[in-house]
Image (cartoon, rainbow, N blue to C red):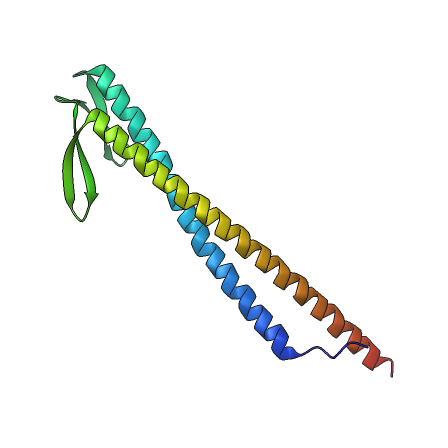
Length: 149
């Protein structure tokens, strides 16, 4: 006969399960931010390419709230890139595209790492859930056995 279910083990496993679930949520949000950053960078690359081809043609510039104004890009080869800490550097159109492509590679690598971590957490969560199910079944069997005495 198996040893009786230790409530401390059940409580400990539930605590671990909650912690892993919270970690997974944090990593999932980070992964979502990476994916959004990649989409945004790709859209910016396409916009920069279109501007380079269009030259000084008028464009619609979004100003927020679903509003756009017609604007003319006077120097489509001058791009100002925010590199963090309120620092902005001027790059050529091609330089900005190259910068964005490098950022995409970095974000893809980070996303890959986050995905791997999430897979490990998922495996741990499944192991804990399996053990908890075993303990619950064992506890039910113990209760039924005690009730038949």
